[in-house]
Length: 296
Image (cartoon, rainbow, N blue to C red; front, side, top):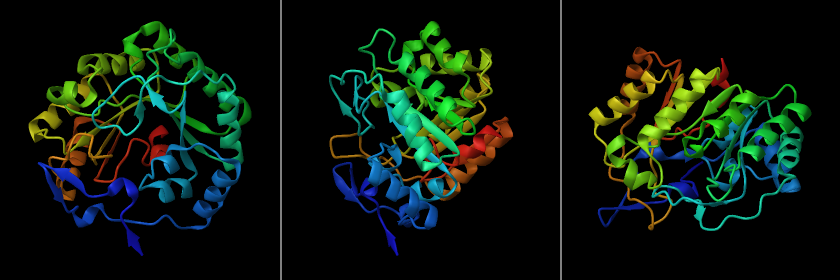
């Protein structure tokens, strides 16, 4: 049985509803491992981005022992045009959260965990202390679990980035999201050059694997995508993910184009030729897709 998940609903492009192409159809998650983990998530009310975001790759990732967790609440201080996370005044920091996340990973027996968060520009430390304590708690409770931290830009403040560097996750990721020309429209409070500098700083500071992701279908040209890829290689990025942008709601930026599988494959081939260690490129690719392979 095939279905289109909630996040893959028809979207308005140029004021008209557009039927999604067949390559955006996905199978419902199945398998014993998925069923077991879904049961645990429901029983213990565990907070994973996989379920709350209805990720199309949930079954595949869970089957391989990978899951993504979001910390620091579910209200973001930024208002990116592509993102379905609520914008507003965030909740008070939960200082028990690091232990809660570590316990969730233990209950689910996760082999590779991806940790992400909303932006917390309202906090003096921008949430970096909770970030570091979460990594430490996971290490204590799950010594065999490897980690990827998908971090905000922390406004490019090096002393804050250093908190992530010091706890040394196997992979540190920060998404560019789009090409330079569209950054102001798509990421509003973010800056293209600042994100590049964050990735450069992380690699120069000794992070083993750095990673970033971009979405396509927002009106970028092929030349702009290739320039973004070149810019990322110039800061010695190791891993790149490229996926199709899908509109979370009618209030968000519309999809301008559905990128074909052949075009995604072309970007993958070019990326590997550029020297990236891993390139995941496809319509349903998301930041944490095949994340467990990116530590190798």
